[in-house]
Image (cartoon, rainbow, N blue to C red; front, side):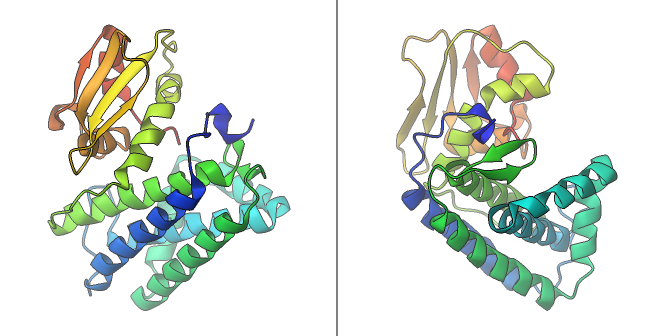
Length: 257
């Protein structure tokens, strides 16, 4: 299975990569200004340091998958051995590092990942958790994760965050991952098409799906992204749904990984 069977033809890597870099730079500016990374974030048991450590670890795994794919089996075995505690244990190990060491590791990893994803041939697959991925999917995935964990840090610090057009990548992942939301919830995949209409940060109209679809979701792109990354509950968003399946999707929505 490549790219989880998702249609990534609409992803333009040359446009998405600069957005990935910009997303990391924005978060970097926020955390660099904070001398104390022990501040708790909305993720239970995770401080700012845990969030950055998680991002740094994921970047390191991306580099292993691309550069030495045969070594990625060891990453999978480590994750399998730790089970549901894998992310917590991994983040805790990184959070125990000195702040300056962790910050530099995250920075260098981000730079190397961007370069590696730029140089990978478009159709070249590399291993990931449960699938083979291409750069077409990994680029928006890294952006999405950076944005989502960054949101936890913005929330922890009580800092207002200006939404940008980079949300389009996160929203697209949410849309194409709809079927996997139902799969993860162990529910039948709806057969009907969906229409998703979102308002971008600058008032742009973003839409997916046939205009005459009976299953419909509307709202701001920001709230949709917050919902599919599970950073906000459905009642905390302005999202509306028409149709039973669309209603259910908003209840269980998640980015597929």
